[in-house]
Length: 356
Length: 250
Image 1 (cartoon, rainbow over the protein chains, first blue to last red):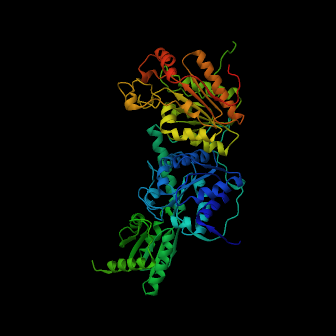
Image 2 (cartoon, chains in turn yellow, red):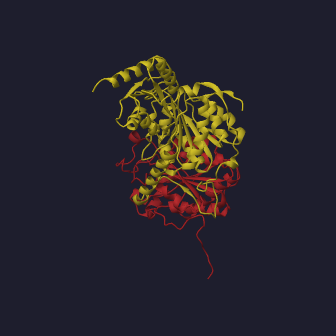
Image 3 (cartoon, rainbow over the protein chains, first blue to last red):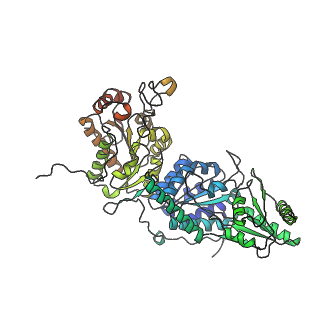
C-alpha cells in the first residue's frame, strides 16, 4: 500500500475514522485546532457526528453521552483544555465508557505557552481527575504512530471499557511525514456493546452511572476497575528497545524526544560509548520490565523529557534502585538538541562510574 | 373488579426518595406517562442530573445516563447527535441547570439540539440542604443567605425561560407549575407537547416546572403549595415563551 504525506493531527483523525470513530466533540485550542477542523469536514462524510462544543467541559460530556450510547467517540484538546476535561474523564472512567481523548501537549503550567512540552505526564498516567482510576495512555513518536496508536486506542478502550488517551507533544501535532493508512474498517466488524444505553424497552434497561452511594457497592466497583488495570498491565505494555542489548547507558524518552535520543545514542556509539534507548509506547501501563532487563548490564539510565522530571519517577520505580537514574529536561516549549543529550548522558555515566 | 388506575410502565417500582410534600414525584409521573402515551418507550433515553433528582435513573424505566453536575444537556447532545431517532430527555434542577450548567443549557438551546429538557425549579438547593439557588426569590431564606436573599449581596433570580426565549433556535419553551391539580394537568399537557415536538423532529423543547420544597422552605406541604401560587409564580410567571408550532393552547 502506498504512503501519503500527512500532518500529525490528520493522521490521528484518520486513525480514528478508519477504526469506527463516528462522534467527535472539540473546542479550539492551539496547537490542536487542526483536529476539530479536519473532523468537521470528514466526520459528516462517514455519517458521523461533529459538534464544536461550547467548552472542553461540554465536549468531554458529549463524549460521555455518545460513548455511553455505544458509539466510538473522541475528543481532542491541549494541556489547559485537558485539565478542564478531568472531571468528565473521572466520571467516564467510573461509568466505564470507552472513548479516546487526545492531548497534544503544550508548555505549562497555567496558560503556559503554545510550543511542545510533556508536562502532562503525571496528569495523564496517574489518574488526572479525582478518585482511583487510570487511563490507558499511548504516546506516538511519529505521524505513522499517531495514526496507528489512535486506531489501536479505540480497540483497547472498547475491550477493557477504560478510556484511552493519546498523549502527544506539540511536535507530533505539527509534523508532516509519509504515512501508510490502515483500511477503513466497516462498523459491522466492531463488536456490539450490550451495556450501551442506546434506547430500547422490553430488554433489561441499562444505566450508565458514576454515583455508587453505598460503600458496600462502591468498593467492589473500584476493585473491579483495579483488576482491569492489572489485566491491562499484564497484556498491553508496549515499548521500543533501541540498541539496548549491550548498552552501558540507557537513554529513555517518549514521543518525539525519543527520536532525538536515538540520534544521541548513535553519536555516543560513534564516540565509543555503548548507548541505547528505551521508548515507552504505553505510558500507562508503564513498560517496567524493559528497564529491569536493561538494569542487568547498564551502568546508568537517563530520562530525557520536555518537563522538569515526571516520567523519571516511573523509570526509577522500574529500575528499583539497582542503577542510578539521571534526568535531563527542558521546559517552556524548548526542545533539547542532540548535543545536550549526549553531554547529559556522558555526565550520567561519569557519575555512575565514581566510586561510592 | 374493574381496574380504574394503573401506574405507568415508564416508572420502575423503586420507591422514590423524595421528601413528603415535594412535587418532584408528580413531575416524574407526568414525564413517564407522557412518554408512554406517546408510545415512545422503545426509543427513550433519559439523562439524570446531580441534585435531588440524581436517582432519577432508578425511577424512569428506560435506558438512563447519569450526568455530571450541570452537564446533562451536553450528554444529551452526544447521544442525540449519534442516535437522532431516539427520544432523549433531560431532567435537571435549578442549581444544576441554571447555575453550574448554564453554559451547557444556553448552548444546547442555541444549537437547537433536538432534545427535551424538563427543568425543575424549586428555588433552592434541595439535596445539599437548602443553600441559595440562582432561582431563590428576593427575600427568600436559605442556609447561605439566612436573612433572606438580598439583591445587593446575592443578585437577582435568573429567569431561564425568558433568557432562552431570546435565542432563535428553541422550538418550544413553557413554564408550568405543580401548585394544584389544575396546574398539574396543564403541566402534563406542556410536557407531553414538548416530548411530541422532539419526536416529530421539530427542535429543542424546554419545560420549566415550578416545584415545592417544604423541607428546605421550612413549610408544611400545603403552605408550600400556597407559597408557589402566591410568591414563586410571581417571580416566575407561568406561560408559553416560545411555540413555533403556533398550536392553540388549551
